[in-house]
Amino acid sequence: METRQPKRRIVLVPLPAQGHVTPFMQLGKAVYVKGFSVTVIQGHFHQVSSSSQQHDFPDFQFVTIPESLPESEYERLGPTEFLLKLNKTSEASFKDCIGQLLVQHGDDIACIIYDEFMYFCEAAAKEFKLPSVIFSTQSATNQASRCVLRNLNTKKFLADMEDDVQDKVVKKLHLLRFKDLSVSGLGPLDRVLELFNEMVNKKTAFAVIINTVSCLEDSSLSWLEQEFGIPVYPLGPFHITGSMPSSLVEEDRTCIEWLNKQKPRSVIYISLGSVAHIETREVLEMALGLCDSNQPFLWVIRPGSIPGWVSLPEEVSKMVSERGYIVKWAPQNEVLAHHAVGGFWSHCGWNSTLESIVEGFPMICRPFQGEQKINAMYIESVWRVGIQLEGEVKRKRVERAVRRLLVDEEGACMRERALALKEKVKASVRKGGSSYNAFDELVNYLKTE
Ligand code: UDP
Image (cartoon, rainbow, N blue to C red):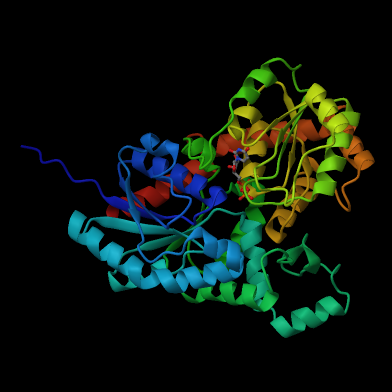
């Protein structure tokens, strides 16, 4: 009689933030479909298991690390200090979790796949002799630029910045200038570099997975493989390969009804992701410029994203409601797939960038942090499917950018290039494509190890 082999288990450890949890859950689905069991280990906040989407993962096991930090610590410390502390606090507790899982599931854990920022996982992997894989949910170029930053002497780097070499191009990353490597918004440079160093020093993983596509970032990927000395698997975009809902916030679906009433390709969709904050003054300029553009707009304004926000002046509010529609959180992928949408104004988070490319949209780029600035440069100067809105946000500039994108010939050319890129990216996840093959290779390895 044939005995059924028990499924091998993959342990996933995402960073508790929307832009990281989403690709992790998509990866989870992709490995689940390939016959693995999945355990998701999470901290005390931004838990998928407590969001309304839990029913979408009925076969996944969710475990909470007891000693993980609360969200208030993120608010208090900011991203870099939070991550440094989280890694210290969680190490022992995570070892206990893995120890218990091994008792529960026998020795059938195939691998721990952890977010690159959750490097505390390596200690447990080492202790229990489990293979580990690093998952980077950001772009390969961003990782490469981090390596460059780390390899620079910090003091010299700071001095160089004072010496006004910011516009010099970094040798190994032909397009990026020193000022583009900036880690603005993450905290003091020496602390950020300490975090980057820790991420690398703790590394014993046998491979790195990146949510990217080789046709988008070929040279950065080769560069990384050389730098890391271990295989780098570009498996993205995960929202195609493992598409499933994983929003931590309730989506307002009324915007789809509103989109249904708009003309094809007329709407500019505006979303600045799950973390960015904007000033009241900018919101007002944006609102006025959007109204002046005469194009309909769908605008995501996340609660808490405008510090000190009261409301738009009455006459502006009236104009906005005549031309546009505002929601607190949208079903973004559904919005981007809608025939009425013609362009995307984005903060250029990596997920949003990939989601836009997959739908073939030209973009207005308004990045906030270092990593988003790198993505914006690629969108504008490498793939040439968008324009950057630089400097202060002003009514006139907003109007101009929207019209360049949706009305002018320039926008039509960007759209053509975006559509060609879309085809290439979609081909990568089909049978025989680069992401498809890389995923097959990784899965075969995990099945046989
Ligand atoms: N998102 C969404 N609805 C919104 C705004 C954003 O579903 O109204 C999703 C978006 O599809 C993406 C994620 O939130 O998957 C944002 O991730 P990204 O990397 O773009 O930016 P971050 O939030 O990390 O800055």
